Image 1 (cartoon, rainbow, N blue to C red):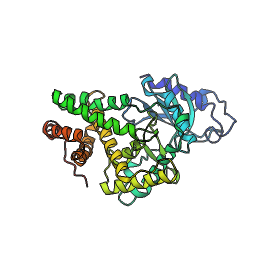
Image 2 (tube, rainbow, N blue to C red):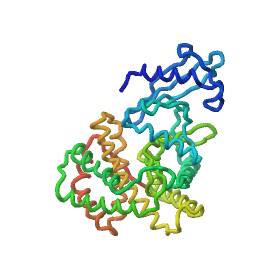
Image 3 (cartoon, rainbow, N blue to C red):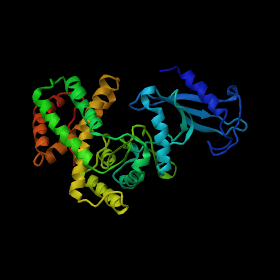
Image 4 (cartoon, helix red, strand yellow):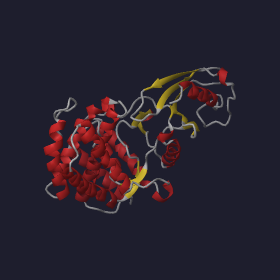
Length: 366
């Protein structure tokens, strides 16, 4: 990663050309020399990625109004061109995203609107969740309205879905838990993977954020929700984002509440002709099995974040993710052979080792 001074110099040059009033809405730039700019430049907490974020506080000086911006330094692995494309796509689709002030896609530099520090997670409560989730699901409804043909997004195809599942085999089981990956585990996992991939592919395909949860939704002015961390968006299964939200890896809601929100969302999609009529049981099964694919993947991702990226805090979130997986395995084992076979080996070989880990705690889902 570059020295912060490189990004800071770029930011200074961008501020010198900012309009006088509010972001890019005015056509009259300031045209001040970089050395005339007065601003603070402070590193702020980041996410699971290697991107670095800085809060830029531009002080009021003459014609320059005080404002707060976010500067981003993203390595080439972090899809800056994709971020810019998807930000514009979402904004055009009436999704609230951070406004773009300036960008150098080649360098991986961004200057964005500062949405503040209020992610959705800490403001959720038993009493407030319904209103917030209605807003979040409305955003997903807006995403589903974006035409696939003109979105210019990659497909969430069988290869990508399987690659994600393989994180469980490659990172969670052998590297985090120290369990040998046996022939029996491989056969059972392959059968389950085929079931989960088929479930995803058979669903209607829409624009999918791919990490739509309470830490990637920001509470902004007028209790509006803004969406961040969208650079991995794809064309994928219609239940993927709903299960990311309603079976959030960082907060749990009772299953009956999850399904109530889900089926309200389904009815809206159907009424607005974004989903062909389908019975509730089928839609719930799509949702549950899609969640199992996601949570098996997340077990691998959180293990990798700990072992490779030295971010052990994600281990604290493993128990809830495990509980989600156990719940779906139990629900569908009686009706799907591949689920039943995997559940047997999971309960015999994987879960007992999980229970001996320092990060483990039992999570009882309601």
